[in-house]
Image 1 (cartoon, rainbow, N blue to C red):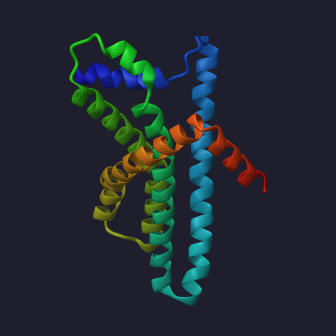
Image 2 (cartoon, helix red, strand yellow):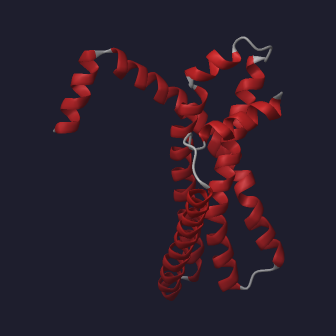
Length: 193
């Protein structure tokens, strides 16, 4: 049942429109090109900044890598938090799965695993190429590259946990704003100013 719920999460997050084969292939191709372009730009910027930092301090280069990975983790937490709010607090799920004999813990666990898989995929696109580029310029041993591939698996555990905590706070703030006209007015006034 768990695997069926996980499969349901992936199917629900896809585009609901029926597309022709040509549009589907074009969509996948465009996605791959955008990801490849992002990786190329990320590595280009990181390596150029790395060369400039090495001129002043070779140790500062490692600090830059750690700072860059930290920023990627913060971005991953923000994206996962927004996605977690939509996944965990999806009211359509309760109408579909309520009559079925599925334990609530199984439903929540399948959603958390889905968020973890999404976070790992994001980490493989953002952090792993950066670690590999850094290791290639320093001629590190092969174990470093194995760690670079495993890094998103490890760091995603922390980022999903933090994202789930922030998603609860985000949902409560969202409900407060949605239910109170006075709070909506105050937020709108603050955003305008």
